[in-house]
Amino acid sequence: MRTYVGHQQAVSAEDFVELALGSPVALWLGEEGESEMERAARLDAARDILADPEYRSLPDDVARIAAEVIEAHAPELFNVVPLARPARRRRSSRKGAAA
Image (cartoon, rainbow, N blue to C red):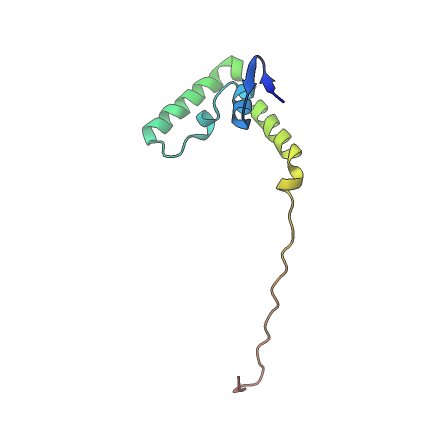
């Protein structure tokens, strides 16, 4: 099954998010090992995008997509199982008791 956003095919989940938002995910999340200068440039570009009237709905779109992902994967995300507490060992109440 193929997934398209507009006329573009989304091959991976990252492609889908990028096509849905209209900007690369790395622009918002950063990349491992980026320098301070690269980070500053990335954040400046992100601010410019958010200032563009075309992208005013971007924060709402991101929140909507995140909510949809959480809803779709809620059983796995919230599959919380209480762990059994280990049994407490009782201390001897007698002084000098032989071990």
